[in-house]
Image 1 (cartoon, rainbow, N blue to C red):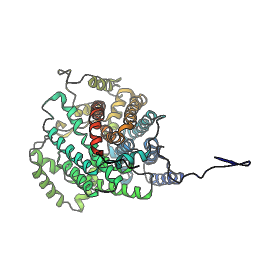
Image 2 (cartoon, rainbow, N blue to C red; image 1 turned 45 degrees about the vertical axis):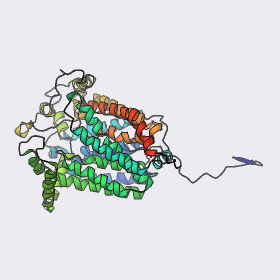
Image 3 (tube, one colour; image 1 turned 180 degrees about the horizontal axis):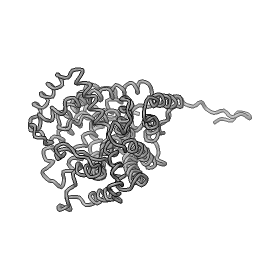
Image 4 (tube, one colour; image 1 turned 45 degrees about the horizontal axis):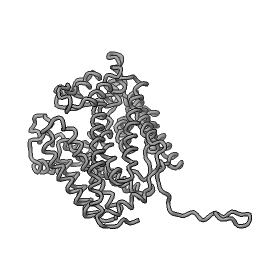
Length: 491
């Protein structure tokens, strides 16, 4: 600021964009357009208020959880759960029926309202954990990424895949360490994240990134349960993190990515029953008795046989698989009318199970099968007894069983606060910025699904956080200097 006579002249502000870090703000015209679209769609629904709420809650989840310049893992996890809550309502609207009629339970509408409210409470808990946190500077992130030698980043990713392969062979050797080994295997996504963001910032090596992505998709399809979603999750949050601003190009690229995921999901839904039957030899067991190349060859044959009819049948199967409030609807009919509230029994049992690790308590009782809890609280029966199937209720339904329609939001809010504090911890490790952000998709991978039970969320999340902390504390300090080598940092 310069004083000249009685006037004050301020220097011209730089046109360079300031360091990002604020939460996403959706412009009023776009938000208004979303309201109009939601209103028009709800006009054709037999549950108009629920349909309107399902659509309009998504932008508010973005504004609550997506911080610019950081990996939007919280928003991605919330969006995945939002899909599982809302797809049923949208499918009912498309079919001209109400949600209760679609799910054949009088509690479906009620369960969806409780789930939407629970999702907002979860997002608020995550947001509260970041209160007062200093925003990151995206230029510091880009500077660190530009200091890495790309060839060494590629070698690190390949070594991570090799270590993953070796660890998979010893998962069940020491039962008390099985969960820890599984969590360590998930660290391979840290190195896929590192490869992705380095490629995008240094603007080279796109062929290597495409090959790594294809490898992750193929190996995911080769597994019994076909875990190809995680690679798209990590790829999308990596892409969004390195963008300096939200624009049309970014939106279009993200749509292309999501369309690719949708296509693969439809194809998988169309062939998965035959594919799994081939792997287990028709026994119904959740194991594979055939080699990797045989599995991929048979999968290729199944995909080649998909015609238009099978494709759309796969789409219907996919929507039915995504929607997951049906069981919650049955729960609200049975609890507390026929079965009393559990008064914290489920969450209390989950907490006790977490603080008594099997490595130290080898005689600890085994977990009750998910299918048994589902049959008990819903009153449903399943073909063949469901003995070979995992059908969990999900943490929101369990929260309702424990504390009722009001008290259920307390554990959900505390869960949001917990994972928000975990996000805050890793997002504030400034010494190893890239690796710290790369661990966030690993941590949030444990809370990405609506059907995850309380005991699996707490147990899985805790062990993943411990392994991630140890990696950041002891492994990353050795890796990062090697990645940089003698190459000077570029501002």
